[in-house]
Image (tube, rainbow, N blue to C red; front, top):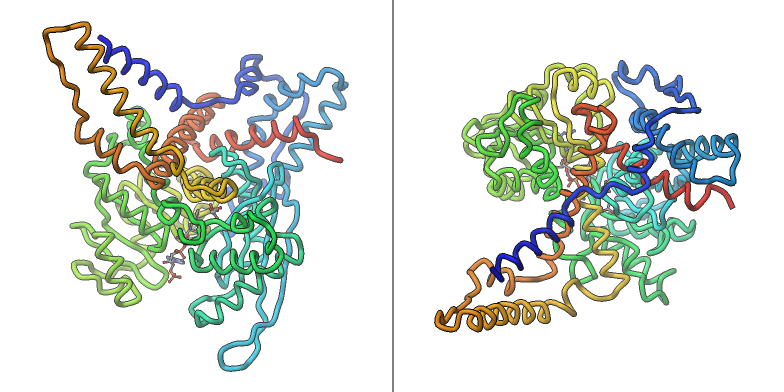
Amino acid sequence: MLLRGVWRGLRHRVAAACSPCIPRAYSAACSEGPGSAIKYEMPEHLQSMPQERDPLFTAMVAYNYHSAVAKLVPMFEKSMKGRQRLTDGQRKHRVEGIMRIMGSCSACVEVTFPVKLDDGSFTLITGYRAHHSVHKIPVKGGIRFSSDVCSDEVKGLAALMSYKTACVNAPFGGAKGGIKINPKDYSENELEKITRRYTLELVKRGFIGPGIDVPAPDMNTGPLEMSWIADQYAKTLGHADINSYATVTGKPINLGGVAGRQDATGRGVYLGTNSFIKEEALMQQIGLTPGWKDKTYVVQGFGNVGFHTARFFTKAGARCIGVVEWDCAIRSCDGINPHELLEHMKRTGSIKDFPGTEPVDREEMLLAECDILAPCATEKVIHLDNADKVKAKIIAEGANGPLTPAADKILMEKKVLIIPDIYLNAGGVTVSYFEWVKNVNHKSFGRLSLKYEEMTQLHLLDSVQKSLNKSLPNCNIEIHPSDEFKRRLLDASEKEIVRASLEATMEKTAGEIKFMAKEHNLGINMRIAAYCNALYKIYKCYEEAGLTL
Ligand SMILES: NC(=O)C1=CN([C@@H]2O[C@H](COP(=O)(O)OP(=O)(O)OC[C@H]3O[C@@H](n4cnc5c(N)ncnc54)[C@H](OP(=O)(O)O)[C@@H]3O)[C@@H](O)[C@H]2O)C=CC1
Ligand SMILES: O=C(O)CCC(=O)C(=O)O
């Protein structure tokens, strides 16, 4: 009886914590029903987006943004009605102003600087950093090294960061940076000089700092590059700032990194896909059975996100039948072991000739028959010309922007479920948020509470045992913690706390997105549902804080 009561209480608390948290103001606005004074239309220059083969990246993101705003206008207006001292005209101007600001990039710097190479010659390097929505400060987003980096790419990626952080309730604005280099062309010494000099250029322009802009890893960058950035900042502008190491996340643990950031994006891709794949009704709509058993998948890009995504998909019971990299693709109907493939890649520098696989054309593998396609490499890989040949039933967007709007349209007509980037790959920024919190608090998670919690749990068992023996004096009941209970108590660590919190974030956000999809009759269009989820939160920030000084 007593135990059942305790369990029931716990269950209610867990259920409350996991239920989708719909912003209170949003539900109120919904219940009043739509009816709009603002006639909202897709801007003319974006109207051809669903027919475009190779759109600008910023235009792609803007198209998705405007598609979601069109759904939300009545809610924005209803919410603004609360501002009773404003006239109808003033309210309308405010809503229109907020809609404009939420879709625009607030600043973007381009820097060019010389670097002395190992052979004594000099080269000029160009880098960028874009700040998109500054409704929350600091802004946040990765830094990539790639020869494709340009102003349009970083601006579009920064916009995705604004929407991504809002979608998963990470309290940041959006940013992104990049250095236009192929890192394979440089030695480690040269890469360090480039990274440090780029950091200095951001410092000089007020574009980096723990309360201003907090970069993180992205394509071709990882803990090493982040430690150079942290060190450079701490030795210059941040030399007297106790929070200086909070100026970048994704750092090695010894420099203030958090346990679990390295695999966080891939883990989030798995957790997010799991939140959709377990839903029977949704899977029925796309012609799949729920769950991971017997599912096949193909992954494109076997870097940080791709490898960990594959690792978790396989662990859940799915079979990897193909991997596509920039130089080749491999296939095996029997399944590819992600750990063994990683070892092979480390040894040989490529996925080529991995034992038990056959080489296959890259495009053919991308479009091959499978249940889940996980694009985890780069932008616009599924587009107008190949979308109708995709045979996967689920697209799990590990990468940012892998599908163009034309691809979205074609795939949705084919009843393919697209789990969108701004939700699915947000595990990285979520755990980056935990790292930033750890850095500004100057203590690791659990440092002050784990032992106390362990003792409290053991006292709880003891107290239940004593109460039962008091009520049932002849029974001599002994309560022993189960093996799993003991494991959880003894293995409790920062890593466990981070994993559990990431899982809670991905589950809760999935609930919010599904709610939006239903509320706005979006069917399986989870991209626009995720944008709606993000934009309503950003809108409320601007509505409450105002737009101008
Ligand atoms: N790292 C993170 O935490 C996050 C990353 N992302 C996104 O995930 C994607 C991948 O990032 P990440 O894993 O960090 O990057 P990595 O550099 O670790 O991995 C990218 C992998 O994709 C390969 N690749 C590059 N271009 C192609 C291509 N055209 N076709 C097939 N493979 C290709 C790369 O090969 P090679 O190295 O040889 O060029 C590399 O193996 C990006 O879109 C990024 O923005 C999103 C959220 C967070
Ligand atoms: O961890 C972060 O702060 C940002 C990661 C990132 O660049 C992304 O989500 O695209």
